[in-house]
Every structure is written in structure tokens, then in C-alpha cells.
Amino acid sequence: MDLIYIYGGESGVADISGRMRRSFLEESNTEVAPNATLILAANKTHRIDPFANFTYYEGGWNITNEHYLYSVAYTGVPLLATAATWFLIFSLCSLILCCCCCCRRQKKSYGYSRIAYALSLILLILFTITAITGSGFLYTAEGKFQVSTTNILEYLLNQADTTVEKLKDVLVNLVAAKQVGVGQNFLPPDIQSNIDILGNMTNISAMIPKIKTQQSSKQIQNVLLPVRQVLNIIAASMLLLALLGFIFSVFGLQCFVYILMIIGWILVTGTFILCGISLVLHNIVADTCVSMDQWVKNPAAHSALSEVLPCMDNATANDILSISKHVTFLMVGIVNQFITNVANNDVPPNSGPFYYNQSGPLVPILCNPLNFDNTDRRCTAGEMDLSNATQVWGNYVCNVLPSGMCTSMGRLTPTSYGQMRAAVNVSYTLYHYGPFLVDLVDCNFVRKTFSDISEDHCPGLRRYSYRIYVGLVMVSAAVMLSMIFWLIYARERRHRVYAKKFTPKIYSQGV
Image (cartoon, rainbow, N blue to C red; front, side):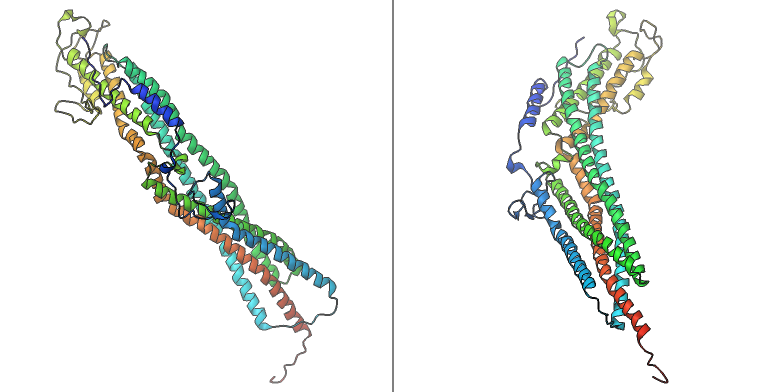
């Protein structure tokens, strides 16, 4: 008894192997035309590029473009200049003070102002509180930023892993379909050949998102981990410095104040440098979030974000979807052909392998979810859905002798039932992953990933990166001003003590 195969699709299955080879080679060797490239965050990244004769950078967000990195790094130059200015001015002032102390040997006259004393103390307390607040603000923001970044990276890795695992499941079931047969009926040789070709292509395509995402995650973590450690050390050091400086100033421990000022001179310089770095980091985060939002609106265009979690090329994804539907359609056809022509056919005993004493109620046929042209099909009355067919068919299995003949009522032998169950499992899995494959073709999977990041993670990431910058600025400015008032308050305190010690008591009787 011959089994008739119906091939669907516009171009047919016979030429799919050649088309798959061509599409794969073309995708590998063809460069994207410039007019097909989407420039991400063009307005936001419109910044001066110091390494392009101080012209404006026009390439949009692209973390792999050195000129983008130069332009965004240039935004931190004002703060780096502040650090250099502070370093030089403090050095110059320290040198002048040392020279004055060494050259002037005459007795000093002390002038004392209660207003200067009180005002310097109030400002010292104010700047010390600001430094403490900034340190806490910095530490809290850094921790939340780290958590937010980790969540994004884990989400990206999970999405990449999901892509890989689902594609592997499709491939495994396609390979299994080559071995599955019901009775003497199997998939035709050309379909099996196309499965082999598609399997090799799927292996390559499946690994690309995972590898690229893992590399991106590793690079980001390698940058963020030392930054986090440095920020924690800076926050703790500046907090300790502000507290000790305040205490030593209040108690008049000038020697310790001078030592702390040398330490603070270096720390404030380093903190201003970190302010510039944090501003650059915040700008990169903001650029990335804007880029994701723009890419979600135009995912078909080639852009720099394609390197982070790339879309699968349409040709390969279409081929996977097409061959999966063909296999699903043909496997259901094989099962129904066996049910109609063998299991439900009361053939005479001399019919050879098609007779095994089948009897009893007829086995319901399987609902084919696809038409011959791979379009969706509705089930008709009496057809079983792929999801529960194996459970229903279990009621039609008979007991058999070693020869394979039924000894009880039933139209399916354990062997034929096992073959039908295997065919249904393959068909159901391939059909179940159809929407996922469609998402790969339309790039909806990657679009949803970036959309979720843009909506759920980006607001917090931008907020915390900005708070890190603000916390560093607060700490830097507060400690810098505190150091100035350490000296002013220490001087006023010393003058106050001298005035009380040597000024005669002029208050008497009512005066």
C-alpha cells in the first residue's frame, strides 16, 4: 500500500536545500548597505569628538566605535579639569604657606572675631554633614545600580539561553522525525536531507546570540566590578576623613589636621576624577536606554544593538519555520494514513502485515493543524487534538502474542501505538514552537527583550547612575570645602584661645 505525500509552500520543498545554502552564504558575505543602517540616539550622542578636530560626532550610539567613546568621554573633561585645578592650587597654596612659616620669625599678632569663629564652625558642621550625606547617598546608589545592572545582564542571558534551548529543541525533534515512522511509512528522503542541512545551520545560528550576549555580559561585569570596589572604598574613606577632620579641628589637634589635609588633597583629587568617570558612565547608560527604545520601534534595520542580542537572520529562521511546518503536516499525514488504511481497515487474514486481528471501535484520526500550504487549519468533528491524542489512543491498544497478533479487542498494537505516540510528540513539539519561530522571523523576540529592558530596567538604571554622579559631586565638594574650613576654624580657635589667655579682664562692677 503506497503512501501519498503532498508538498506545500510557494516554491515547494524540493528546492529548499539549495535556497537554504544560498541564503546562508549570502547572509554571511553580504554587507548591509549604509541606507539600511539605523543611527541610534543621534540627537543625544551629538557631542564634540576631541579626536576628530573637535567636530561633532554623528555616528549615534555604538559602544564599539572609538569615536563614540571619545565623544562621550569628553563629557567628563570639565570634572577632570576641576580635579587638576584643585590639585595644582592646593599644591601652590601649601608651598606658599610653608615658605611664609619658614621666613616669618617675628611675633604674630592675633586678631579674634566672634562672628568669624561662629560662622566657620557652622559652615564646618554643615559641610561635614553634607559629606556624610553624600557618602551614604553614594553607597546606596552604587548598590542599587549594581543590582539593577546584574538584573539586566541576567535577563539578557536568560533570553539568550531561551533562544538557544528552543532552537535546540526544534532541531532535536526535526532529527527525531527522520527516525520516526508508523508501520512502514517514514518521511521522504528529500525532507530528511533538508533536515540535515537545516540542523547544521541551526547549530551555528543558535550559538550566536548566546556567545555574543555572554561576551557582552563578561565585558560589562569586568568594568563594573572594579568600579564598584573603588566607589565603596571612596565612600568609606571620604566619610572617615570628614569625621576625623571635624573632630581634630574641634579639639584643636592641628598636627593631625595637617596630616588629614595631605590625605584629603589626594582623595578629593581622585574623587573628582571619579565624578568625571561616573558622568561618562551615566551618559552611556542614558544613550543605551534611548537606543533600545528607538530600536524597538524599528527592529528590522541594522544597528549597533544587533551585536548585543542579534536577531536571527530572516532566511535561516524562515527555513526553520517552513521545514518545521512541513514535517508537522507530513507526520500527521503518516499517522492518519496508518489509522485509515491499516488500523481501522478490517482486512482479511491473508493481507500480510496489514492484518493483526484488529477489531473493536474505530480509532479516531488526528487533527492536522496545518493545510497543505502550511496555513492554519481548524479541526473538524471527530478529529483529536495533538495535545491529548496519545491518551485517547491508549484505550484502543490490544494485548498481543509474540507474533504481533491481537488477543483482545483493539485496533492498535503496543508497537504501532508507540510509533504513533512518537510521531505525535514530534509533531506537537514542532507545532508548539511555531509562534517562537515566527517571533524569530519577525525579530519580535529581540524586540520584546529590549522593550522589557527599556520599560522595566532603564528608568532605575539611569536614576541610580545619576545618583552615583551626584553623590560623588556632593562628597568631593563637601570634603574640599571642609578642608578649607578646617584651617579657618583651627586658626580662629587658636586666636580665640590666645585672646582669652592674654586679654586683661576689663569687666568689673557693672561693666
